[in-house]
Length: 144
Length: 144
Image 1 (tube, chains in turn orange, blue):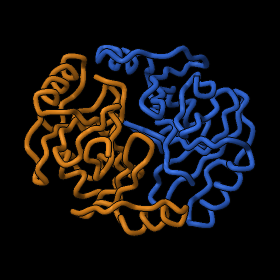
Image 2 (tube, helix red, strand yellow):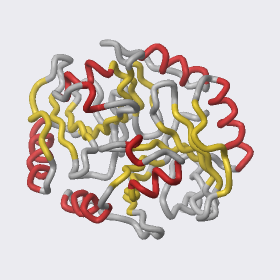
Image 3 (cartoon, helix red, strand yellow):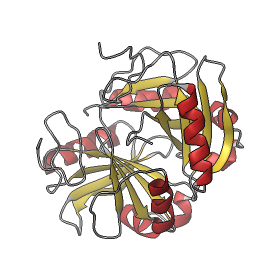
Image 4 (cartoon, chains in turn purple, yellow):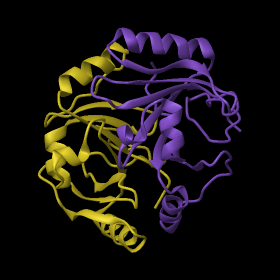
């Protein structure tokens, strides 16, 4: 597992409200779809996503995520790497929340939580390939 | 507010247990002190910190942080920048959890949460100056 976090996702009951807050701090969102609002950062992306959809995506009740919910995303270069990491995490004591599978938006991902419940999404996103240095951009094709 | 996250902090009831999990995934910790375990990532650091100390640091009851607790850290180059950002966040609708103040480890920081409770630590850490590109390293002096 390389040392990187590709995405930090905030689960929001009201995405527009939260997005407005970060925009008031002069952050500029990037173009997105599917109800997500994203801000590219150094090396990774902060995403705001509806809490109910995030819970559905993970397969947990919304209450289990709670107020101030966040997940950490780790992206990989292909699907087998996702399978490998999910298996290694399970062997290391992770609880698998969602086995790796195709996602409606065209990617491939799974979720686990570490021994104390911090939730990780392990993903291959063919539309946002990792840059050579491993950095992630929302609409990031290669190193251009 | 520049587009970056310097630290992601996982609140852990058992830091050694969680650290062992990430080490089993082949992550290598960096040298730390004060009961924190840190892993440098691309552009930022993942820190594991005792949940009770994190709650005390923020000034919230431990139960308010809950299982799977995380905070996001945004580091700045000096103290006035911390004060400025805390004031702008409050004006934008943040709830101030801890006004900016000196910390026992020699830094200066405050906490706020966004309109839905996601917790941010805004800090100046004189021992880990930001690199020119804004990236953060746990023991990171300049761009060496």
